[in-house]
Image (cartoon, rainbow over all chains, first blue to last red; front, side):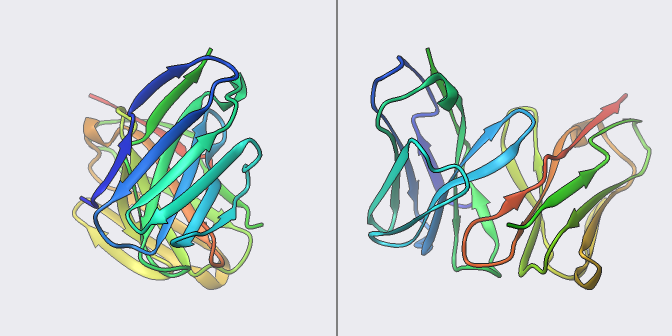
Length: 113
Length: 108
């Protein structure tokens, strides 16, 4: 199994509070990704990183920010959580862009009440 | 962006049956993967198959990149094959684009 750890695995938070999800990898892969999964939508890309301090937006980036200060860690922050951000969040890694296989973490279930 | 369509959306089979899942995509890709999401929500890599044919036990996959489709074959289905099967593609340097999945139920 790819060495990807997401924390926390489950979280319940109140509307308007900040939330940070962490993805940690032990594979030394260059690329890291955050996705969200919602019923009827499959998985959708939020943000991705192609190196330390190098990040870019995905399909559904509004309301989210990311940071990558070390190769092994990629943080996803919801500055002010809303009920529409209730979802399951997955982190993924890959060794390069384009033609390389991606591996996913176990997911974090976030509920915003 | 690239569009990914999977069919059928739902499939119910008896144990021992064979099945074919299809993935159509709208543009050229340099990465195509099949995943199985088990009932616990874990995404399991099945195949990395941007082109050609691969087999792994009872599962096999074929991607015809020039015609923009991929097929996942499951033979002699078992109840543990139940779950959602996702096709995902990438055309450039950003992340994978996922289809909405095929929800497979294998009945004993």
